[in-house]
Length: 264
Image (cartoon, rainbow, N blue to C red; front, side, top):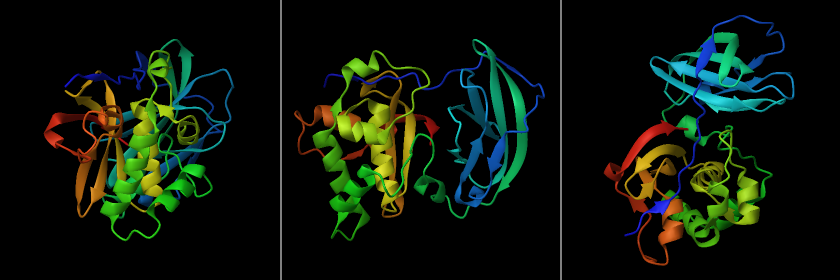
């Protein structure tokens, strides 16, 4: 089976981070949903300055671009415990300085709670067309398995892989699920964000996962979905491209064929 190309550079590595204190009076941290597994942050900064959010727990650290000026939410995907949240400002190139840091404690209600939330790269609300569509697709269905399959079938049958986009992607790119639904095109990051958002909106926990698989060249994105008490690997990008060859293949993939780097 021929491999498909679905690589995307999704993380801009920081060459240097300076632990400096600056005037961070305008940094606001929303902790109201910490026990649901997310933290919000906003900052009234300069429009032409780049910012990042760093969230760490034990040895795990995640970096996100912050676009602002409104509040953006980020996952606490490493379970209950103590996290450090930092806000970084670009100095030049890939050099950043820390202008705000706060240690927080999270008592997350369950391991799946975070994967039901709306966050920066799995962003949804009840008024979105994609959420309305998800609600229509699952109407009358009673099992999560049937609901997952209904949304899965829609995505792999209606969203095309955007080969032009993958060759012109910005390193700071974050999926716009409404844009993906409207254009009916996307890269692996778009497919997995759209699928996760639609599922979460219907109360079905879904992870957006980044990493590697022998099925695809380069860095890839897919989903793990919580069905009947276990996490199931689903790769809508791969299936959308390969459905002409294997139209009757089920959606569940072999976990051993997927190597996880990041989970959102």
